[in-house]
Length: 166
Image 1: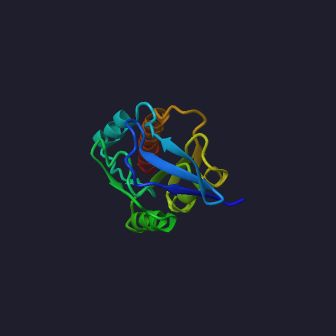
Image 2 (image 1 turned 45 degrees about the horizontal axis):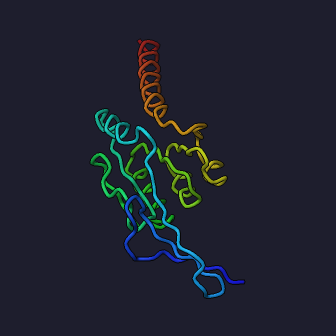
């Protein structure tokens, strides 16, 4: 038995972003219409990070993402796992602090090169194994809380060192 799945170029029905055709032994066995949904709070979270002065980029392997622009964040589409890793390596080499959030095996290389990385719930085992942290539930709001806590910790450590030097 030969199983083949092909992404189709035909227009997807409303609410679906991808059309996949399934073939078994060269015979069309069915069509799947897939829809992607954003985690609740994603748009607001991106906007809050931007207000805090964070540079955001979305790197995806999807050649035609459903959201080509999320809250004004640039989306680089059609990237291979190596291309994602190369982007992260460039930013790190330029002295940037890079936090990579991912969920797939294709994100593992970039996650391992980032300053820190976070795996989403249900991420592939490889992505979870290279991540600095793994979210345990679907809520993404803790990312903003973690950022604020890290900034406060940095300020306290900085003040403590300055006080100790004085």
